[in-house]
Length: 267
Ligand code: NAD
Image 1 (cartoon, rainbow, N blue to C red):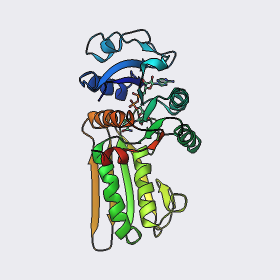
Image 2: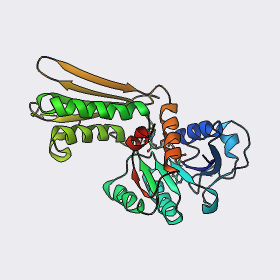
Image 3: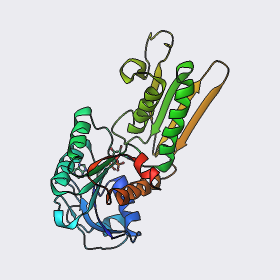
Image 4: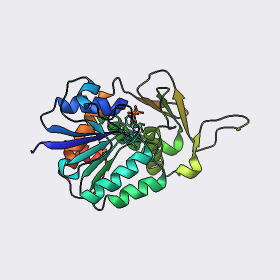
């Protein structure tokens, strides 16, 4: 397989730096772009120096040279994501999007742009969480309507969106497989005189604590028995290594819209 020319959008962020650190150790990649917003204080610095693996001759910048990039990985902010996806689609550059908190119109725009280039969107790039989605689908199909379902996510206090993209995808997976509706059955937190728990209610709760990387727990509570499934990310490398697997996958794909399920199928 040819070496992939890799760009990172959100290069100086928590995820960006971990992804670049792992990419630098992987012969399958050469880092060609470290993109940040136009007022970032580290613009012009060598990204290798920023991350801590030594100069590689790639400066933190806000501009992309379309001739020198095969795949862009994006862990930035929803507005930054949509701008870069348009630029990538216009130039046939593959995109792997990890950014969460995208609204419906931003997601629709990405789906539309994926007709021109390969785009992968995943609210969680860890292999474990993507297996968790399969388990949730299985339990929801059999027990979804007979159990009380609650989803509880915990993240660090700097996280900007709530509930997490992963918790929303868990709720979507429950609804799709149990015949429930995101609009009618899912509630976000409880406060005040809310009354008794409604039948087929799916509760989603966001907890923000210290530097927690990401814990997702789902409970299916029946009258006589209860199933709980928890995923606990011990390190950001769980997401970073998944993002690099996704980049290798997307580098070989035709235009289209892909998910981590497609990457897992090809493992
Ligand atoms: P962070 O705040 O540490 O990093 C975001 C980076 O994006 C910052 O360096 C910021 O300066 C940069 N940025 C902002 N605007 C930009 C622009 N216009 N152009 C380029 N860069 C820009 O956040 P983080 O913890 O690295 O998370 C980033 C995103 O990824 C969040 O949406 C988070 O929820 C998501 N996330 C997804 C996964 C997953 O597996 N899919 C895992 C962890 C985090």
